[in-house]
Length: 309
Image (cartoon, rainbow, N blue to C red):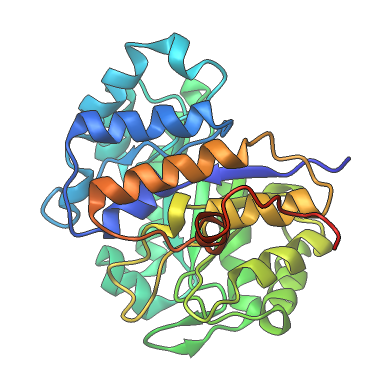
């Protein structure tokens, strides 16, 4: 059976685009519930300016709280976003042993999102990668706007491949390819993957698809067929991108688990427990779940999924 690794990004990429600032205890419980559902890589937070992303304030304290109860998170990796050396240093002081950096394939989006050019962002990452390498800490590289940019329009696959190669050559263990505004289809995602795979092997790639046009699950399936085996998802479809106008949330983790179960690909995730977790966090946020699977299960309780009719 083919195995698929799902990276749960709800506690970071999801919550950072929700209007509510959740208490630390709630954020901690969300991560612990996700771990109990079987997820083994969960983004815990971001060491960024609280003025820009207040929802991620106190990520250091959250990481310390999570580390204080290791038995609850046995075997779970908790990567955190560290966009520069200052953030990396603070994250390591809080106990981080897995970090991530964030770049863009779009020059304009880079300026809008992190206030610097692509080249400047890469220079900021160099000391982070060097410090992490010395400490034996893996670094994940995020690459946004791999299909299109809200300001520039379509992005050439060759440009995406060039940026992905830079991140890999700097030492990123994995490159997460983000369709930030969710406009991709298999017809645009596959040429991008073909270009990137020439410089970074598929086992080192992850798919990160937003669902603005309802294409995220289709894009994940296309990437899976291409050979990608790691996918980012957000419980209940939480989040999006605060600097990408019109972008809706990430693909719901529930929907990807359902997809891959139907394909016979093991995820290690208990779908019922995950749906319950999604319902719980939506209640905390005062919103409804964006998961189609969760909505279907709620409307037809007790009806099994992935059963031939």
